[in-house]
Each structure stands twice: as structure tokens, then as C-alpha cells.
Image (tube, rainbow, N blue to C red; front, side, top):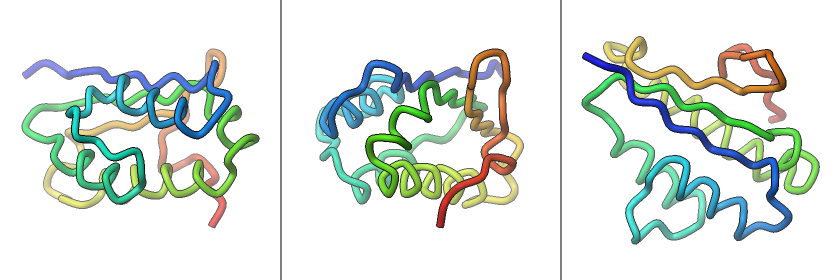
Length: 111
């Protein structure tokens, strides 16, 4: 089975709605995505059935602009990755910083 790649690019984000637009576009969320963390959880947990890679670019931008929201998003992604232990290997989430790729489990998330 092929791996599907989703890329969420925050590098040009300047406001909260642009952050959620990047999430919506990068993860190919449905039109009813509500641009809040409850809706994010609902949509991200609906993504299953095939191996996937989620790449996060520009995390430093949203950490600088929206520190708490960046942490919420990363914690939700981490919870999603481990929600179904038997499928842990089917989902990879990587923070991309330049040439470096950091697995979400190894990325320092503020609590």
C-alpha cells in the first residue's frame, strides 16, 4: 500500500485564520472544517485507512505568533498518532526545519 503525503505549510502565515487555512488545505480537510481545535481533532481522527505522512513546515512561525495554539495542534497530532496503537506505524508526523526532519515524538512541545 502506498503512503499518502500531506504537507501543512505555515511559512507564510500571518494570522490565526491563515493558520487554519494552511491546515485545511494541507490536510485536505472537508469543507465543514470549523477552524478550531475541536474540529481539528474531529477531522484528523477521520483520516485513516492508508499509511500517511504529515509534514509540518514553518512550525517556528506559528510557535512565534500563536505559541499556545502551536502547542495545542502538536499535542493533538501526537495524540492522533498514538490513538490506535495497532496502526502507529501507518502514520508518520514530521516537523521539517530546513533539511532536518524531526518525528513528532522527538519534537519538544510546550505543555
